[in-house]
Image (cartoon, rainbow, N blue to C red; front, side, top):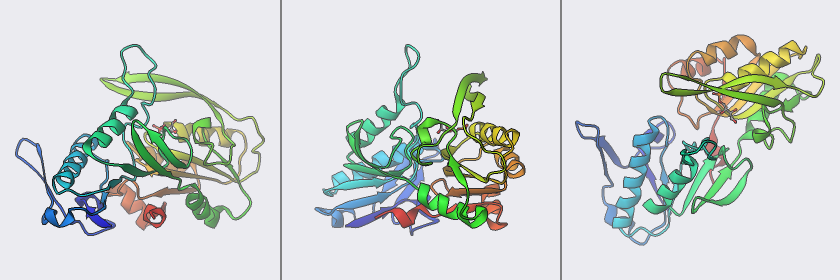
Length: 287
Ligand code: R5P
């Protein structure tokens, strides 16, 4: 099996393809010595975030270059699958983005996507979705192991909603969600969160598939604090930490664990370096 490594995996593996842009930002992809891949199985390591739109085009072009070279079984290792949250049509005229993206990757030539804690799958395993095989690996056991370093052996695990309760062994809060727009950006607002179990004095780990704006997990932690919880750690596979969420969470909880599925740059990298945040390496779970 051969490996194609994209530049956006440079923090973990040595890139071996060319990805560039034309002056107008059109994408250019080239696989040097592509002919040598004829008849071979190829695993493509390529992140689909940040810049999800151009990263998806890059993924499509990489698959086409491999098809042109007659590569055999082309698999994509994309640690975070973008557009995974719009997985149903709620309002007339919307589209199911999750399915369109997986269709597109299948059409591009990938036979399988390996990804982590994929939002719409809601459990670990192998699935057929949007015409393609998806191997969904959960980082929950690794995240929990890291949290144990700080919370000790005795703590309860809870997810902020039922969607991620496969990560917390079934225990979840109940969230009541709203939505608001600022300009043309849609924010998912958490109006209320309910807990139906006793947390008083207990150490708690709140675990979720992702922290994006932080709105969900911040509400969850505030709720636990109001209900008298003891030490609180939070863990999420995909740590976007948009806006000032990292700072806010830093002051609200005792410990933060995430992974490197989202490449860590800037303040996130700094926080890992100063041990304000622990980072699980998803590569240890790629077989
Ligand atoms: C929602 O169902 C997800 O599992 C996450 O809880 C959510 O997407 C996190 O987004 P945010 O950090 O913006 O609340």
